[in-house]
Amino acid sequence: MLFKQKVVQLKLRRTTFELRSMTKTKVYEACMAKVNTQLAELQAAIDKVQESIVGEENSTSGNKYETARAMGQEELDRLNQTINNAIRERNILSQISPEKECSSAQLGAVVTTDNKQMYISVGIGKLEVEGQIIFAVSAISPIGQAIMGLLPGDDVLFAGKKEKIIAIE
Image (cartoon, rainbow, N blue to C red; front, side):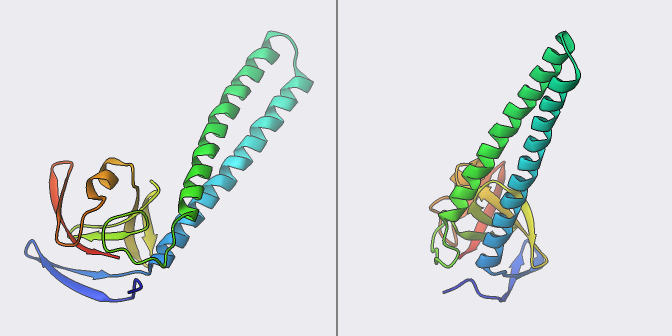
């Protein structure tokens, strides 16, 4: 069954939550858009630092040049490491098929607990999709490891809080 639009009323902890499911494809697209935006911003920052390094070469000499160049190179190294991580995340996302049905918590699954919805993919964090909050979590994160392989009806204990898995799609 594809991840369909639906309204699910759940009576939990003496409160009724109304969870409107979003399409898994929209969640996937939101994750990919966020990673691509990060990549574009990082590339712009790298270009700016490289221009700054070249500008220092042309305008100063001696110790001041060496210090500015070293600082620019450190920033460039940090940005390159960050962009490599973002590329890795995009590669992981590209291996996920948003149309794939998931019956257990696995890469590409949307897991709905009695408190939140999570998309097991890459560690992007909190996203808003179709007016709803969903957390994109990495399969190797502590919460990802805690829920991997679980089924609807299972309980998960994380950070001292117990949550029941309501649905997996």
